[in-house]
Image 1 (cartoon, helix red, strand yellow):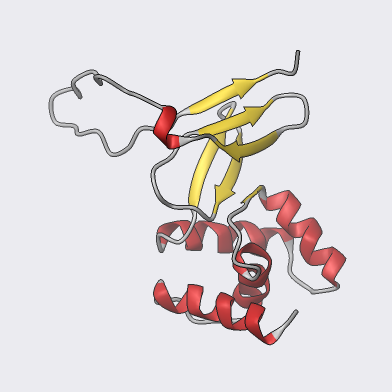
Image 2 (tube, one colour):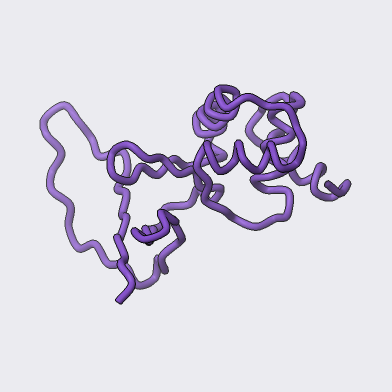
Length: 138
């Protein structure tokens, strides 16, 4: 990794008030080091760590991704109720889920129109709306 990659990752952690431990920095470099947004699963990020030759357990990857979500620098997107993707783009936006290869990608926000949401039940408020559009190749 380059100095720019490490600087970008360190800044990303600092903006969330997270201490740049070795494991956090390793994962942050893979997530945001090149300045691009990405969607990863814990398993795909773990594989990238292993390919890099770093020593981080799968449990640490899961725990760190959860900490990044709690700090507001990652967004968790759940597909099928059991598979979670983690998105470095934390702004509200819809996603395409490509069923054949299990890939998540951003969908154009400017083309999505939600005219009305149902009222939340008494004692509750709508915290967010997640839109995942499933795609199948024709």
